[in-house]
Image (cartoon, rainbow over all chains, first blue to last red; front, side):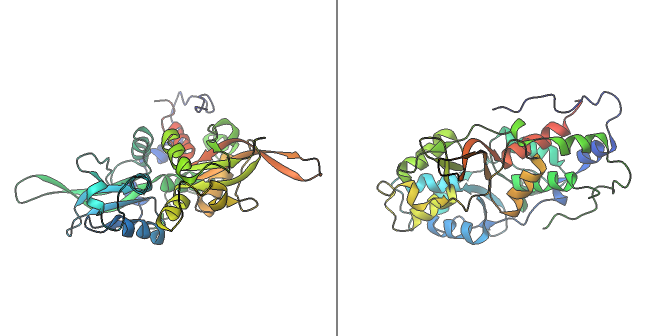
Length: 163
Length: 163
């Protein structure tokens, strides 16, 4: 069931105007508001937050909106299956932690972000801006999220051009 | 954070060749193998199946591959939060049931399927073929699944044309 190739003719000469424009689209123009939580909230409350915000992943941030980690429905289901007390154990214990987070930035082409989603088999990329902390280390401030839902919206938007 | 309009010029005249081809793409050419389970398995085993197959939703089918329902990570998390005994309660009790399932077919344009994913805020559409049962009623056989991951792959494939 892998997608076959050959549904599009090769663009041998000039790429079409539409393709040029597609390649110019940036994450910042399509990103969503970040669904963020603090690492000390319980896994139970994280699940409730996912339901109320209707998202599949939450971005875990510090008080200063610094990216600390990510937690997905899959992580929380795994915790629910195991012996984890969802009410007692905080999100910070089971989250995927920096530096193991795949990120994007507002000026990244949406095509590159879409490739990251595919390659790493994830649904959500945090959109970050870099800053330098007091020790001279690079850190990441969360400014949004970019998901397969955003990508789906883009394809629909392209497909309905002029309709 | 809604996507703004105006990133593409209006296609006032002939739609570009690329756009014409995009509108011709069919679900059947991009669908994935269905991740299907029977309604009598436990919710616990459904979660394990989700992990081993690395999918976010499972399609619930009869012995004859007839579509009976769908179950998502969200449904299972909700069950885990509540008082449901995941080991004892079968998937058939908590699944979303026919006729409340949004479906697609192999000959549907991928753009229409992508719109359904957006409009209904779901990640997975079962791909079905219709058949008529012994009572003359229309029923649905599951032949695949179509997800936001498939849509993301399509956008990446278009974007890398000729590269």
